[in-house]
Amino acid sequence: MIICRCLEPRPRHVLKGILNFFFMTNTGRIVFVCLLLILGAYVGRIVLVDAPQAEKKEQREVGPRRLDEMASRLQKAISDGDDHFVDSLPQRSAWYPADLPCAARKKAPEKREPIWDLLGMERGVEVGYQYRFDRSDGVFTLRARRDSDCDGIYVVHTLEGRTDDWSSITGTKKHVDNTGE
Image 1 (tube, rainbow, N blue to C red):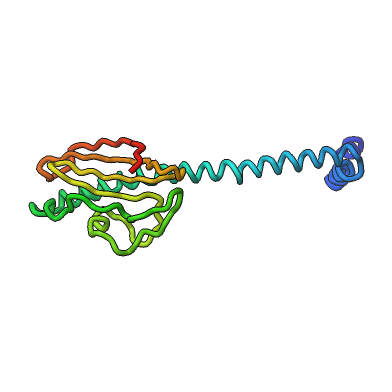
Image 2 (spheres, one colour):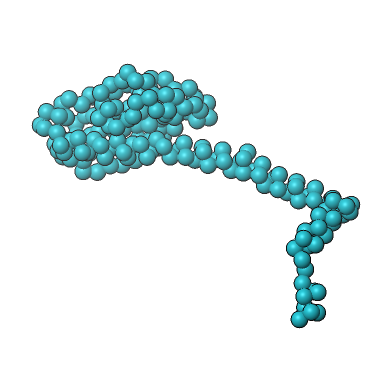
């Protein structure tokens, strides 16, 4: 037992030996600096590359996800509404918000067409897309667009739905276009 106890390292002595190696020897200092550089490169990649890419990916998915939510709200409103409900919907809305600087987010204006309340667009929230609603002859179209790289060409996400006498939505189709609107 006594022999085994002598061979057991004591935590304080181990820590002191490691610190002496890193700070008292040239080799230890070089290893320590290399470890700091590797750690700094890893943290730098996370902060400068990975986090911005994750944010851009999230921004790309906001518009299409919001179109799905709007279509669900429209479906509910159509099924809950009376025979004249559909006639109260606009044929075409203006882009909301009316202007959106490229690659930017902007607070959605409080003043807007009533269709955006029906479709669940919150007031005063930051948006990175512009939205539009159209309806005609049993078809509704929801669009979300943005110019994320400031080249004047919008990425436009479109969700189209067909209806049976506007009593319910029977199918939706989603697609993406690049347009220079």
